[in-house]
View 1: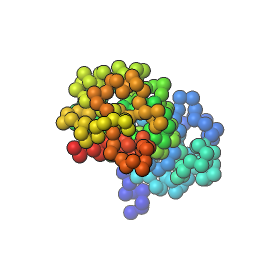
View 2: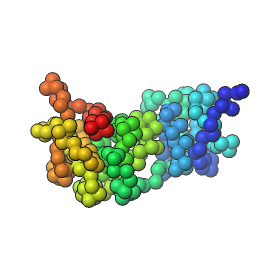
View 3: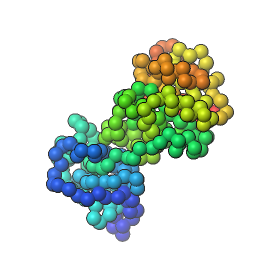
Length: 262
């Protein structure tokens, strides 16, 4: 049996192929993803509308699944693909151009399973951190991440690569007013815990038995005062005095583990 015969069909919806070779920039309103995990997850996500896939033969063979027969694919060499993505980005022979995911509303996630934590990010603007937090959110079954539209990275190939497929799994809710979103979370029964190095209580001491909204601020500045004021409790991770703080994505992973195993 040929290798391709053993693969499942990829569920992605192909958009109509337009134009020829890529210009090195995504088309207006499109997102360009790269790397096997990010591209494969996007192809398997039925909510994605795909425009075009650039790939090496090896890249296609690495996919867990088969593309629809009419999927718009253009085969290219590795150096050609490198011109389509961010400098030195590890594309792994796959570059996918697709439409961004549709907006998700906060009410849609707050009405879900209350046992799943909600992750709220205040001014975490680095796309690598946002992607890593998405990956941890998927690993520890968070219901969504919530960010303020003006203080968060856009959906991008860097976020998707750092998320290693989690961008397609974890809902990302973008809101205009983060404080108001925290008020809505409280009304839905979530206990809002903000991570802050100066807090007296540790996270283990502050964790309740019920639903949790974990609030994290940007590295260095931390949470804004107004966001901290909208938390029910502030808590710290019990790290050694030898280190001042943790990277926000590492802190998110540890906190989500603690919430999951309380």
